[in-house]
Length: 441
Image 1 (spheres, one colour):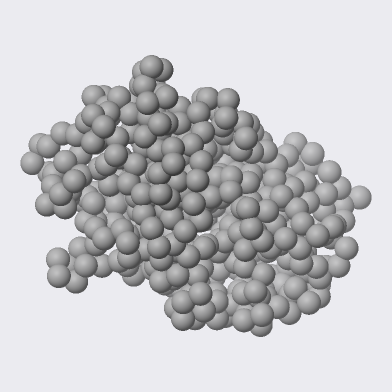
Image 2 (cartoon, rainbow, N blue to C red):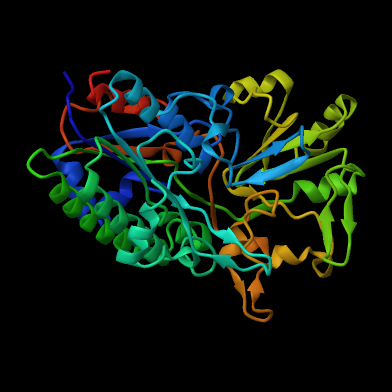
């Protein structure tokens, strides 16, 4: 028999154990149950960690090796937009359906959830117009659901989900829409991504006054989510699980792998009047950078050792993995780069390839997470002189992604009932089994 009929899993990036003391609503939840360490698998970034938690597997099995992909067969980079088919293993909702087709699931704002097998889905999917503007929209399952949410709550505030205007409004909409969905459907399993702590900790540093203020903002929204969902589910209260995807550490150094590859004659650019853009077809090597690691894609096997040698012993680089060495972190997958770079905890990697800011591509100064072949946290910083995104990567004060070697790089998982969590620590891949166990699987 199932241990619980309803389970809610909150996925919160950046949540640290010491933060809970500053979050009364979350602290009350923790006091009623258990709290243990949650160890993220490398790479400790959103898409891989969410895939780890929902499949119980690591990147070498589910295939999500970063927040983006380089599709070698097409010669194309895809950042953030891949559909659920990119995940090569069954997820929690798939396994629940296989066990009992009457068990329902909802997935709210998780990455790569478009087209997934859950019964209810809501995730951002803005429409990119020919003039470069975006129409606010969300992919929902069923399709008509977004119209209902829009009419009730207004459009999802995409401008507050990422970029210089990032704030609590986007996470508040996620919570309000989740409550609305639960009132109507009461899914047995509800997976909800709450991104708010990602912003200030990266922009100003994890211990900055702004990051501390963000804890209070998120806790206020979580308090409303707790009361709203508990009311929606009625007398049979759900089991709450709260998992931090990773923690964010302070950084004071930046590495620019693509600039080094360019200076070594391995990376090529082209300029068609829009600034220098990366020429993938002509490049012998280039780096898809993602917070504190990078996949370096090397066209010719004879260049692999030369590329690796460029970065060994360099300031800000802790490890350079080649070939079978990638197995150390379960990144021996066909989608991985031939060389993987891992930064030191105080450093992060920027995607820039231009050597003169005057030659930067036009999209570099915009919030454009899809055209940039790598993650760009500088998108949260506005250069007031140009009224555009800053190209000063040193403004970024917090990052994550490197393997957790210290206690401060571990997150936490909270259960609202005692006895649900066992031991003092668990891996992010254990979250899948933990949820399934509540349904008797």
